[in-house]
Length: 276
Ligand SMILES: [Zn+2]
Image (cartoon, rainbow, N blue to C red):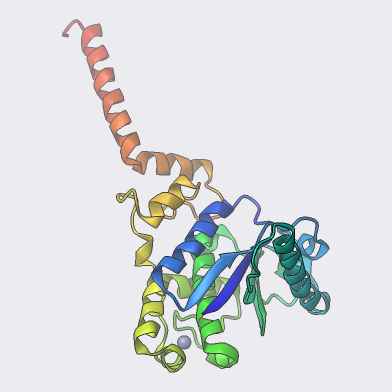
């Protein structure tokens, strides 16, 4: 089985547990790729360069990324030795950041690491929310790794709402999330790699119906809401004050409280009028 290890750079106000939970939930839905979260790393200068709103020069990025991947592997092994744990292969690495590249590329795919630069994401690009967009990128990452080195051939200049969309600007990537479906060309490449049945499963993952609704307390959507991100209201990294009010009003528990409060208010008015 392939493994993809996710490393979150500083993601500002985005609740990382909500993102990590959705990533790990993907392991319940398919068995072709095991997604895992890297242990927390402290004090790495390269990670500092991927902080929100930082702009990193392409030449600098290219000269440092290989050493960073080596550092991640060595540091993980040191932790395993320190805690007397068995060795775990990291597989390929996917780094999610809110930094930008000076070339304006929002993702860089290399043989053992992919880096996502979402610093240019703005709330006006929603829908979808930034969290949904990141999950789509991670599902797409799984698909690229399953196809292997040929994944670079997957890219098409036209936009089809498919993980293979080349997308010259970050704003056009919204269709990958909103449409969420492999085009015929890309689906046939994935079918060649893992068979028709498994390829169809990945196509279903992209549609994200598995996220469910807030009516179901056991759905991923409900759990993510409890972890601080309402997928149906919040657009950006964290809810705005207005989004918090809308989320409160949509919540079933809150609706009951508002009804009780309304009934008490009516009773008080009736008493005040001498009609109670
Ligand atoms: Zn495609």
